[in-house]
Length: 120
Image: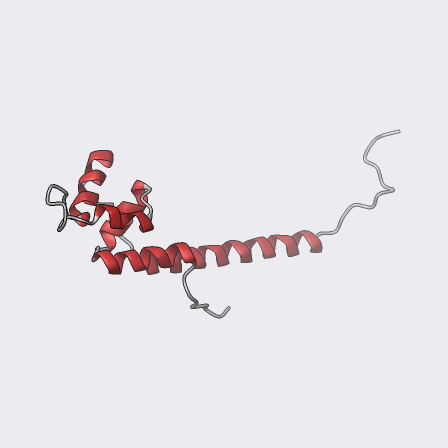
């Protein structure tokens, strides 16, 4: 099986762009995703220069994450690219297993329709 390396889908690309635009770490992006934030809505929260009462976006995400999950950061931090690669590999394994199962079902001998197991 050849390894596919393609472009990320639109949702993943939106998070990659948001990470670069707002200068977030991989952990902060993962926290934001787990909190259910929208990458296009992060700009509203990242106006701490113009609105001094707001926390910087990275600190705000960390604060919300701690408030909801009662821990500083996720147990395992993966970049978006690593997560995409793992998901592709998992889907490929599932697809291969399903294909193998289908082939094994086709190769099994089936019982003829005329033979019945009921006693007469």
